[in-house]
Every structure is written in C-alpha cells, then in structure tokens.
Length: 416
Image (cartoon, rainbow, N blue to C red; front, side, top):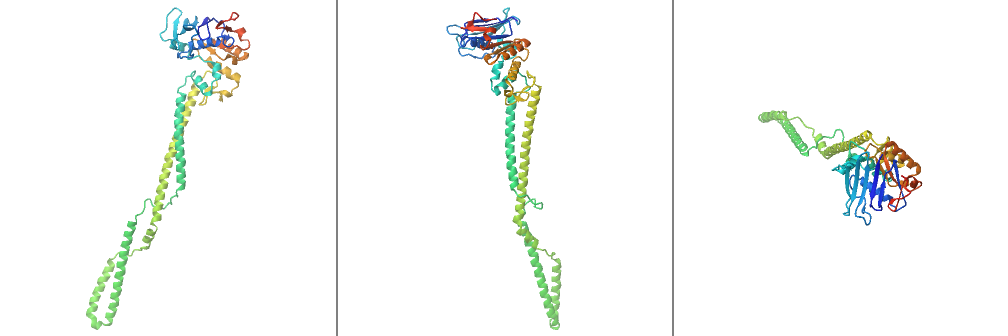
C-alpha cells in the first residue's frame, strides 16, 4: 500500500505530508494544532459534489491552499486547489503518467462509490438523517420519501372517507326505517278526489233512481185503488215505471266510498312514509359509496406498505439485520438508537466499509468519542476489508500510535 496525503496552507495547516504504512491513521495533537484543519482538507478534497465546506479555507498570509492524495496502486493523483476568489476550490484528477481526466468529480465519485461515510458522525445524527445516510449507501427499487408522501396522501383520503362514513352512519341512524308496505312513490290527492267525486255522483244517481222508483210505486198503488177512474193514468205511470227500471239496470254497481275517504284521511302519513323511504335509501347509498372510498384508500395503503416491505426485503443492506422505516434506521427490528453502543459502533463501521470501491477510505472527525477497544475494532475492520481510516483523535495513547500535529505541521516525535 503506497498512499500519500498532503495538505498545504489550509486553515491552520502550514504543510503536512503523510505516507502512512498502516490501515489505521490517527491524527493527534492539541486543540488548535491543525489536526482538524488537516482532516477537513482531506474531507473536502474527496467531496465529489465540490460543495464549499469551509468558509475561509486559505491560511492567513497564503495565496492559495492545496490538498492532494496520491495512490500508487491506483496510479492516480487527486488534487483540490483553493484560490482567493472564495470558491469551493478546483478539483483535478490525473494519472501518475500525466494523463488528465476531464470529469474529475465523476472520477472521485466512482472511486469512492459515493461520498465518504464518517461512522462516528453517523452515530451522532438524528434518526431521520441516519436513515438518509444509510439509504445513500443502498440501492432501492423505489424512492422511500416519494413512497411516504404517497402514503400520506392516501392516509388523508382514507381519513376524509372515514369521516364521511361516520357522518352518513349517524345520518342513517337518525332516519326512521321505512315500513315494508310503504308505497314507492307519493300518492296524489287529486286522483283520490276524482275517484271520490265519481263515487259520490254514482251514489247520488242511485239514490235518486231508487227514490223515483219508490215514488212511482206508491203512486201506482194509489192509482190501483182508483183503477176505474185512473186506468189511463195507471197505464202511463206503468210505462214510466218500466222505463225507470231499465234506467236502474243500466247504472254501475254501487261503490263503497269509505276506503277512499280513509285513504284521503291518511294521505299525509302515506306520503311521509314515501319520503322517509327515499331519504333512508339515498343515505344508505351514500354510505355505501363512502365506505367504498374508505376501503379503497385502505387497500392503497396496504399496497404501499407491501411495496415498501418487498423493496426493503430485496435491498442489500451493508449489515444483516439492518433496515429502515419512516422514523429512521432499525437493526433486527429495533430502532437503531436503542441498540447498545458497542453494537452501534460496529454497525456504523460496517456501513462505512460496505461495498467494493476502488479507493477505500474512511474519515472519522470525532475520534475522541472512541475508546481503545473501539479503536482496536476499527483497526481490525480496516485490515480485514483493506480500508484506510483517518481518525482525528487525541485521547489516551493517540500521540504514541499516530501522527502528531503541532503548529500546523508534523511534530518531530511523530511515529509513522
């Protein structure tokens, strides 16, 4: 392994040139010595997006700042130069034989397989940012945020449909249930009155006909007693009586008007029953439609959840048991923040060293959060997976095992 890290005139660094021989590279030194400036320069050097991470990168009194990485195994030189114009610096990538690459940002991104992942910084992120950082390392068949927004929209539709279901259920419960014999349509009083008038006319005609017949019969009896005197009149009356009988026979049968009068008296109740039936049926139809909308929204939610479950199940996460939900990262189904600290550190470094990029590099800025055991575990992972790990750390044995920075340069007693 032949690698060299060089930083010149960057913030608090005058000149630091490292050619480490081990996988674990500890950068030690007192506060203000320049170790953070060195780590920041290397971090920004490998930022494929070219974002400006440091407001004033150039050391006071210098014309420009430089950060450079040389890898003889990859036969590449990566350099970023900051000028006084305040930009994010100019990135260049060239082969050691002098050939230059026209799209250096793409080259750096492809070499790293993305951006450099700081496992200790990952542990200090909130749950949402941890999830985003992990998903940047995982290829999913869908965008989880888009799926979440779609789910939120369907949940809102289900909520609105549920409210409508409850409203219509209450409305339906408040309506009288129609009787089985209620007519389908309201009855018109005009029709009943017409039938009643016709029945009354027929009754009156019948009564009049009977009255006339009875009168003629009485008259006939009287004339019979006076047959001798009134024989001619009796014969005439007899003819009239026969004619009256024929008229009676031609009249329609008698009609019972009491049912018609009863229907007329109950007309309002009948029509109210019709209106009640229609209101009940209309509300029941609306309830069924609202329930269908609610059920459809629930089915859409179920489909979204199934899509997410299948996508996450098919995704190749860097550590077995690692996954995400809407809140953040999970490990063996437990929120990542609830996992014990030793396991969280192991998982974080497993994420940082996942995949097979050509340039295997991990940068840890808050190395003072790591105890000796954690540092040893990092060294073991780095050796096992072939990663170079730059760690900014000044606690415990750091100065004896790493490179010590003093006044922006390597101290004389630094150990490679």
